[in-house]
Image (cartoon, rainbow, N blue to C red; front, side, top):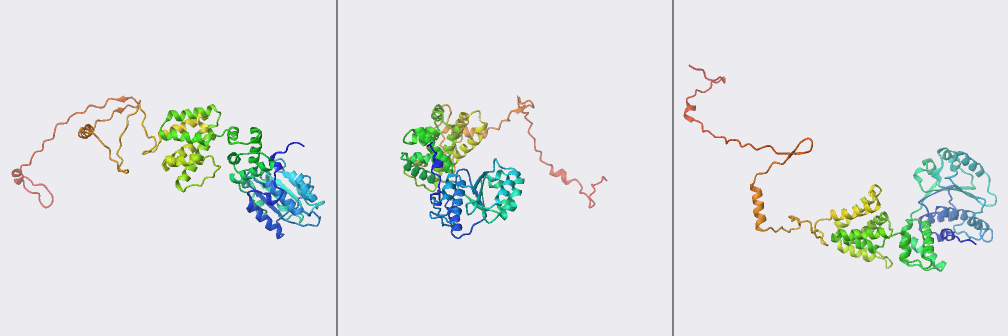
Length: 460
């Protein structure tokens, strides 16, 4: 028999083996146990979280007859009756899976609805599972509205989509909607560990955790990466083999690079960037991993963090949390996010990555303790720090220079012509001083006053 990939071999066949979707499983179990069955269900969520798997399990629950052939609707399908085995093997006549991406026209939907009017051949319910239902055309949605609202009592519709925003509200209102969550890395890694144990293979817990993070919430993607890691390692799946396969930079390299930035060692930081390029690491992925590292550092500084013993980044996070100030962490984190956004506009990934390093060095917060040294070709500039309470120390010559600068008149700044060429300042012409003349009080007394009408005095 040909090899079967892990994602298909270890697909859950009942609610007990489902991972990470307890809220949906609990609701479906209660509905099945109390026989409160809806005629249409809508499963939403990203790829690989279990939409199709839940649809098949629900179809088995509706049509299971038990080992003795006398069972009814149950939340615990036996997995041994004809209906359960046929659904698992994909040959059950009354369970129809349709891909809406390739069957999206109104004609195909009309044909499906005409067949739905017929009773099931050898099952309790006829179940239609329409995957990626948001791909249907507007006319196809309109054609199924009436049947979706009032289907025959022996027909159940299960719709699945990764983009519920594109499903018309008229369809959403006729369905019982369940939102499947993304898988946590811990849940994916735990499931991988159980699969590796069942397969008789060895794997390092840190390697499985890195694969789980690379899955980004999808169990199917995680198992596909695990298949690839087994083939790549050719034996025991180790952390180094997974890093080499994914092109992921180790946290120790990013910690060392951060330390170089803190010390102001631009040449050392660029040397690490060059070494990363020699090993064919992705600079875009490096920016993402670096930002994730600083995110953990910020959390460790603010609220503390409990580290797993299998976490390879724990030592580096603790080290950086003690070396960096919260202001540095926040600033560098924003620089990395901006660098990720600017990566597409950069000349190449190397330029985008190294410019992020140079921004960190250029915008280093004032008052940094670690390695705040000034390059040799630059003279140190002393500044007053009224907030920190540290007064600048000046020698006598500097005080004298400052007093001289205050007494000298300000020189006029050079003007520029309309063409942008600096012009000579106009000559300063010294104006003669204005002499103040004291009035003659005796002469003023001889002048006649003005009359009441405001007229000046007239000569006699």
